Length: 245
Image (cartoon, rainbow, N blue to C red; front, side, top):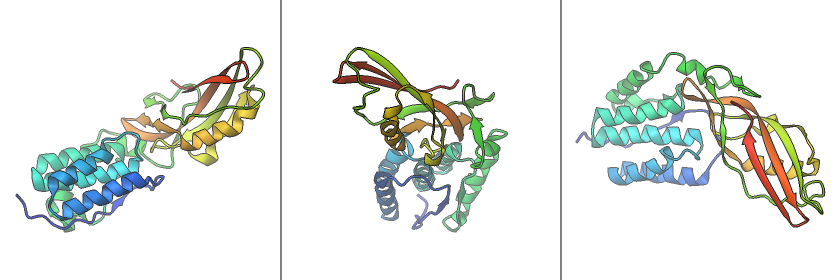
């Protein structure tokens, strides 16, 4: 086994929404790595890296740390695999001074970056928004909801004395981390206007499988549709979806 170097990696990724649970797992994983408890470190870090509902920057950091764990526990192939997963999430991934821990780690990361598919780094450009209102550009896959909080709708134009249907549509940008960019949310139409505030509150907590271009998570602008079906004054069913293909 290679001599283990105390690791405090700094990953240069775009900051995302802080998730306390992920931060705790990452800190615990680093502590186990520093203590040379490689199996424990791997278990903790995989709980972040392999969870698609966690923020992308957290997952990227976990994969980089898993690369270090794999390097010391198993060798180059394990490190390459972990770095490859991190680059799939963020092709622009940079790790500050990784060669201080072992020059081989920097070489392995550089080799995996060089092997990225053509156009992958361009697709991950954080300034680009791919327009998927209606139909995405060729080669771009739209995002999909993975979570929307349970919401009760109380207002008059959603509930009724008979079975009624209504809807709302919004345009919004979904980030590469699967989280809505709050300033991008615009209501674009619908008949359930009094439900707007509740839907907006829900969207602030919503999570998505992000859109992808060249296999890389990207920012996309999409139309979101919420449909309401009221059955009397006490029950409202609602559905939601991304209107893109």
